[in-house]
Image 1: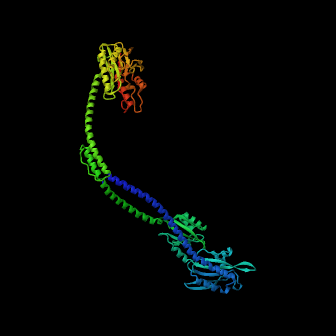
Image 2: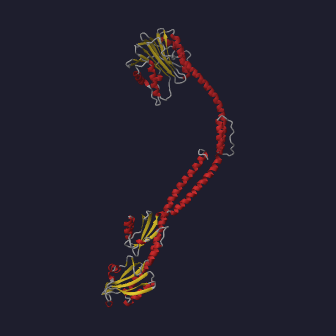
Image 3: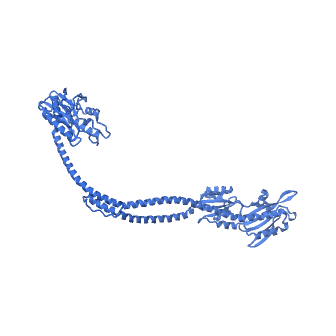
Length: 639
């Protein structure tokens, strides 16, 4: 399928929209699923830890009851001193997790037994139980922690775990309970009952804790020493504080402080490989130890990643099938468009009766077919009318070109106009706003005087150009008979007002200059006053007159006046198309700027001056359409 076809673009938009929709939905799903999975996994870890602590308590709590009961019986006098060994033997035989039991009396408690008296029973091999009365100078038990701490604190005491080398050859802990006697109404410390527990069950129980694939658990003593851990080198050799210092892991110190405070909390951290982990730590109430469960962060989301991969494959396959189905359906539905495009190319080439493809459905394609059929009919009719209109327009344009050539041929356009009069400098230009215009200028010799004129017909286009042509023709005719500017204008006015149903008029300036003296007789019929320009840049405007334009009033009277120019002076005449030339910002060229430009060009020849002003006007207007005819004339009297 080509990339520039409508079908391809439709399919691309559909597939991209579906893909974007999937990305949004997948993002929402992934965020919610990730959050729920994290909460679920953490809750499972907490529940697993609580269950494991509960199982530990089921062993530790009954173990605590044994020495507590023996201590109560001793205080109650229910156990004679000679029966202690049999009671202890029964205790060891009845409890699989208890390695040994002992009743340690205060030194000299039984005078007949001597200073030391500590009957004990303990396992000797797998099933044999051995009894003994301990205590001598090499084993002064009343100086040991398990004896002194409960004796001084008067509370039961779980010792730190220790490795019983040469005895049970396993990890053990001791639970000690103080007991008392009453002498003369006072409670007196009499000794300690203790049981030794093998912690093999603890190691086995903790090693069975599994969370995710590589999650694990371990136990810390009340001082932070590792009691169990997957790394054997840590057990009874390292504390959580020493490992934190060794590995540079401050979160372990935070965990140790939480453990000492008996808190339960989830702490983030990292393993030695730098992977993120979460550790849930909770206390074991009876022994004041703590259980820690480690959750690998990456494995928490492994099932989610697998599900995402499956979902991604399903979506990719779905988008592929959607693309195939869309290609099939859209090509079938848009096939008439291809045929319409081919028909449109033939119609555009001029074959207006090209047959259109058949459409049997009553949908947009049917509307398009009917629209094409209507377009064919209207286009054929339009082309016929366009041919006629174009032919007529070409005829009019041809006639306007001829009219322009005739109009421009009526005004002088050869410069210098009088080669035999070197003392006279003269140059003029006319630029119409349309094909033909209503401005005019003229100059010719009437006897020994130069007759010159400039005018601006009201309006533009063909009517103005005809009025201009009539005015110029009448000027030449009347000037042969009259030599007074006022009389010439009066005659022109009477002729132009006759049968002037369109009420057109022309502003007109007419002058007669004596070339020898520079005296100029003139009459101004409502035209812009000319400018006298001295060689030093000084300019002066001829005074405005009250004479009306030509062609308005048949009985209008016109006055004339006289002024003179000296050798070196210039006379500049123009129409209002110069001062009213506007640019795209609707700014007029204006009389002030015209004065500045004339003063700057005071030493130029008439042709140079007119050309300079024409360039300046073009720079002011730029690409803005010309709004009025522009005419300029400049003459000078040379020395």
